[in-house]
Length: 336
Image 1 (tube, rainbow, N blue to C red):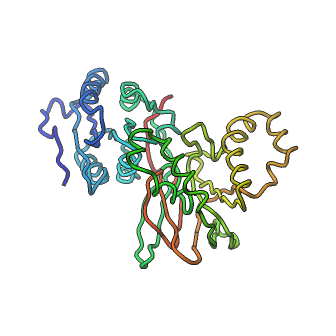
Image 2: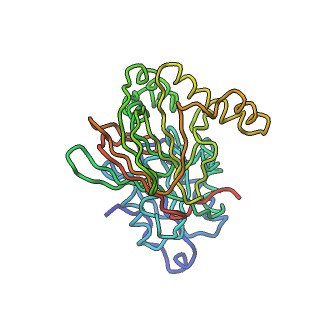
Image 3: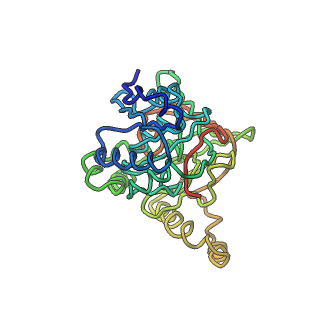
């Protein structure tokens, strides 16, 4: 049971709405966070919030369950993507809204939803007074090399292959100093030594495809740090998964993928003239990066297990994975 601060509230206070703040105590900005939350409570006529610390063996899931059992009206996750994902896993299906205070390195979920990642005060204002939006959640049921099965949730995207290997090879000290730029360093080291793998993949009730790939990603959202747009048409509330298969055959293929996500998706495809230019230059006919969409994705890896990641965090290696969408399962506070 997580240690909860603030359960001894008066009867008068308990009649007002109350939030719970689940925070990672290792992140900076905790003292200022308490001050800003107190100000928001006063403006929105909330009772004093519950304050619950995450733990090394639980980044937020158990704490969020405790908050829901305590009857709170709002749960605020203050931390990185790991804290947000763990809290969301517990709030999934409860109807209790999730507020976000990004304190991590990538903050992928917050960036995709337009939550301020560099202004703690604005993020708290959104958490207490923003618009409730129902969003989809990705459920990943994976099989480990020994046959053990696990179930996890993803809010942004999960991947198997070089993206996961890159994340697992990221230098933690460099990550602390440079933030998401540390992933660039890891990618430059991972790509030259990466080896494609064969995977049998199936979308919904369609036919099986056996492909030689560098990575397969299953996504809810498509925006990455560094002004990159991996999936320009991804929608977080369409009840579908976006699947991206990366299958470059050489270094030139990786350059095309980079051009696609950094230039074509982000700039050219935003206008009719730009889309026409992509068509004329053959961008849509190339096979280095292939997009599809569905509700269930089954992946079975041939040969050795491959690295697996969720929302920018490494999750070890897997031999198979089944991804499904849980539509409108999570309520998130966003800007109107």
